[in-house]
Image (tube, rainbow, N blue to C red; front, side, top):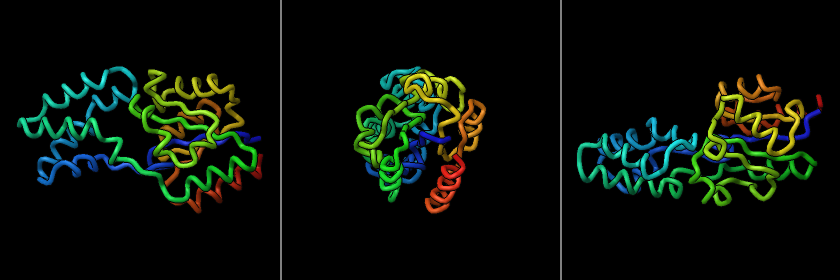
Length: 205
């Protein structure tokens, strides 16, 4: 029987566009692409999500790849302010979370995210007051689809894998969850289809 719904964050509860903060501070398209790639599409970004690098060290490495002082300055601005511009709640998801909670289901978050999210997740995640637990990869020093992060989720919140249903936009993350005993659903942005699948799963028990 499913008793708990576990959500991913990016592209499920919140939308995310990597170059939004870059576009807030810059107008030159070539420089935007260069800075965005160096900062947000980088090995350091993964290390931050895994909790293996400080923000200061990550930024220094990101800046080192850039070719001008202005680009390095824009990289710093984009990096330190990304959480203000790159994420926003997806319409309708807060209401879905609320309905599930009111029906008695436990609501949890399992997301690949850096420690920066600890500062702002309550502002950007829709329906956050209904969540029973929040787990970010950087705190656990592992990330989806590694089995360790799912095991940590179960352990931290005393969850039984077979009683959990996981919603994520990445197939490999769902595969990782299913290998640990959770049922899962690959979310493609169609909330109506998601809700139909949820009803099917919850009826099945």
